[in-house]
Length: 345
Ligand SMILES: Nc1nc2c(ncn2[C@@H]2O[C@H](COP(=O)(O)OP(=O)(O)OP(=O)(O)O)[C@@H](O)[C@H]2O)c(=O)[nH]1
Image 1 (cartoon, helix red, strand yellow):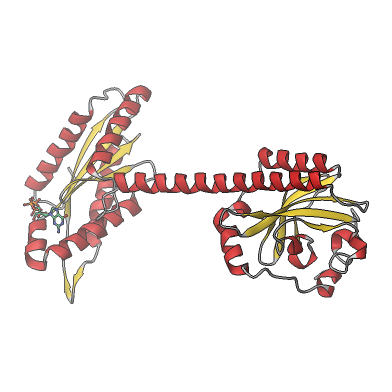
Image 2 (cartoon, helix red, strand yellow):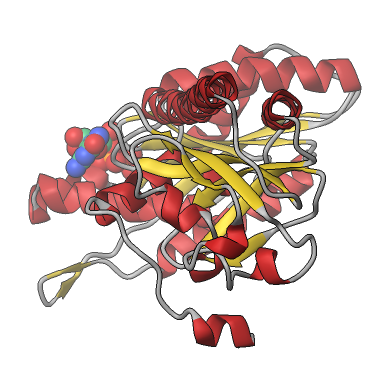
């Protein structure tokens, strides 16, 4: 620990400290580097106030993180070493016109070492709920203070900074909800696989891509064997559990570019882009063995579950339409059922 940190181990805390920290983390301002918009506002602050140094600071629980620094390179300071720890206490501007003359600022690192700051003026960055999450500050190595007009401009710039921070946070939250909505709209809730609509949508896309790049494309149709018996003997809830477990098994065993979906009821389908028939047969055989090996328990009773697999494929020279790919996989699945189930055709 630096000597300065030992001399000033504590710092003042605003009354709303916990809510303030929560607001800081909600704003996600600490997660991003400040972009050119923030730098522009600090440059403007320095110029309007006629000082060489300016930065935006985010005051976290223990540290003050600086962003968009003008005139100096600074990453972070212990909160106990930062002028900004005082600014977040105030409603409006906090000013040390001569840092050496004020016991709150005289011993701080930026005062006693380069750049030997002698003057500090800052406005808290208050969120729209009123919590001060940081500051916009201007500094100089000569003593002095801001004119009323400069104070007013600094306060206005601070409002622009917080508006920018909040706009970014709203944008990120919106992106997240859209992503979640998209997931909900394309995922089958029980198996976690693509739902039928999404699977067919992806199929069209993959067929178009295979045609365009003359690449092979395979589809594996999977149907659980005698699944009606599982439902009849162990109940529908157990049937659902089995389907969910097999959905997870498939998700865990396909490549990221493969598309696994629930085609309907207990029929599942995996699209394998860039995969010729032999590769798809191999992959299906691996899955078949894993489905058979998966243990499902109904209380103390084991519920044996197997599945039949049908492979349809286009080689790179003869990409046909989506329907015929599925039809080929379906016909192969039918043969697998006819030839005794728990097999790949
Ligand atoms: N628990 C549960 N059962 C489902 C679901 N979707 C379809 N099923 C059941 O799956 C069974 C399918 O039965 P069938 O089409 O006769 O075929 P099967 O018994 O699997 O026999 P084969 O396919 O010929 O091996 C029916 O009992 C459906 O009710 C589901 O979401 N949950």
